[in-house]
Image 1 (cartoon, protein in one colour):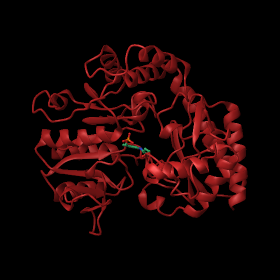
Image 2 (image 1 turned 30 degrees about the vertical axis):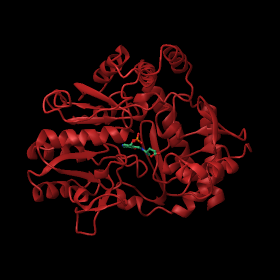
Image 3 (image 1 turned 180 degrees about the horizontal axis):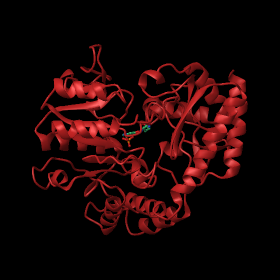
Image 4 (image 1 turned 120 degrees about the vertical axis):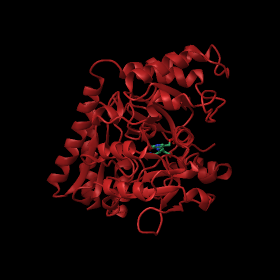
Length: 428
Ligand code: KE4
């Protein structure tokens, strides 16, 4: 079999739609084709042609400790020898649940699932069951996975009416999803009044990570909390990205706002398929088999391997000084990028919270989806390839984040900043 990624991609496309098991990996946004990866070690990836990269995708967030961390690998090796899945409770599930409850301020009880999509779908179903209401309010530019209720964009109507964002989504589902501008608390208040007593949940990324990195404006999250309290709406923080990324307690701890439910994913599985939803005990005690018995189930939910990897990773993240180190690594990267922009006379925005950041190919501040819409995608795409050719592995989209890990060294940062400067010069 040819070893080139080109040949591997052609072969994969014969039997897998687009040759990938998640569309973003197909490089559709940036053109060309993906590099097939052979292995990852620490902060580096190696493709099947032996090329080495400094990795800022880190599997789209999960590998906050870097690839193949020795403690995670050895814990998994031991767990594998005891069997990979039983479909019966194991104590490692309880251990991980207890650590999540101890780490995330708003979580009294938590249910493990297999993906962030499952977590958000389940949290919304639970909010609908708990409130007896049908509508969900979400925000432009936020991604909550591929559940039907989320694949809705703000329709052509003035503000909020939903329109399917994918074939296969019934209009009836779209009619139940309201979408407003991120950071526009007045739009939220207006939608809540216009749909009074009909909204089950507000779901939000407390720091948006799917339109690049966009921070909540002062008062936005507190405003959501106030509207939810006034209107009897369940406030769901989708912390699939921010959970354990912007701090051990996630964005809710960093910004001091307590949601009713929280969705976790990525980091919580230590690189294996695991996610979770949890929150207020009086709500969670309605998840089947308890209370109202809101249905949710899964053959591999809480499987021992993912629990083992997630537990080992979260134990290491719980050690003193870890987030100070991640802050130092991430700040040195962002500050160096900003210095490069200054040297080149460029006024691009760099948004960062903890270990998630994004540089936008547009001048001036980027605080909402509309501002993100002004980026120069063609120039980003050329920059993406200029960085890849210099051994820096970024997400193939302007609408994703850079995720430094605790494995990134000062040398990695220096080499990244050198590539960044050269790549910016090349595309301007
Ligand atoms: P998954 O189903 O992909 O595990 O999680 C869905 C999800 C939910 N919520 C947020 C805030 C998310 O960012 C995601 C998934 N993130 C994308 C890209 N940022 C994963 C990459 C992909 O789709 O391949």
